[in-house]
Amino acid sequence: MNLPVHSPRALRLALLGVTALLAASAATAQITSDAATSQYQKDVQDCRAGASGQDLATCLKEATNARAEQRQRVPAPTAEQTLTNAMVRCAPLEGEDKKACQARVLGYGSSSGSVAGGGVLHTTETVVIPAAPAASKP
Image 1 (cartoon, rainbow, N blue to C red):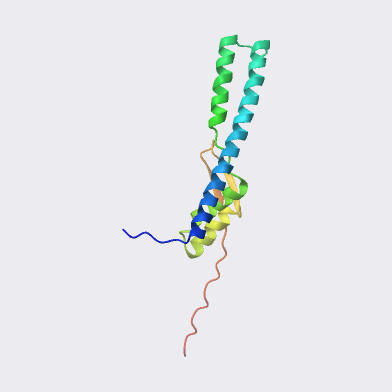
Image 2 (image 1 turned 45 degrees about the horizontal axis):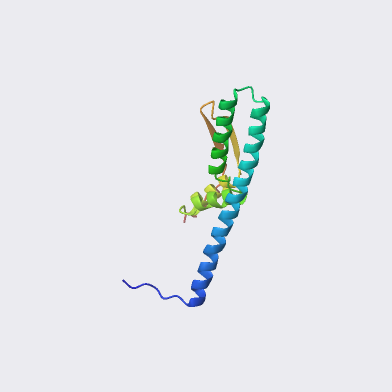
């Protein structure tokens, strides 16, 4: 098996990129963990003060479960990430289908209906000018 040979500089840059990604992930996880711990401490104080309306054991169990759930949460994607992801879904399409897909992603057209009512109908109109008919010879 032949593996591609990369320059030492390229390998260092790749390792730097991976390190930066891991550091960013760790920082995000730390922020989430700090927020979870802060909320947990507030919940425990509320439990001990009797402000929850539950017995102490149930309240403390709920606070612990809420902290565990918050720590496992994945942050919601940004608007830019959502748009990029949607545009990537249009990439396999070609021609007019691709243009129509991109128009829907960008929010052109109108929407009507509701999920509760059975579905949402998204409508876009595309004006197509027919080709001129071939001139007939006398």
